[in-house]
Image (tube, rainbow, N blue to C red; front, top):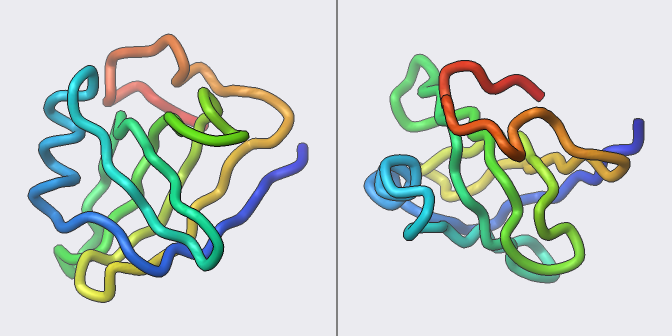
Length: 104
């Protein structure tokens, strides 16, 4: 399975991530990479121990990877992280609305 990796150099704060999770049909977030930006629908957020870093799962909503699922590790403190997109297919997340059952 091919996976595309992106370095995130800027992105949303914690309240924006929480809004995007709470209102997935009307709120999205934008992550900036070295070369471009990625608009994303957030489906699940797992807060890591320090309270400032997260594992984020969702669906890309713009560009060449639109409708593909992703997993990101992101720090709101540094507004940076990494984002991985499955380049060959899509996980069960695409049509799944129960955030707690999502798995890539």
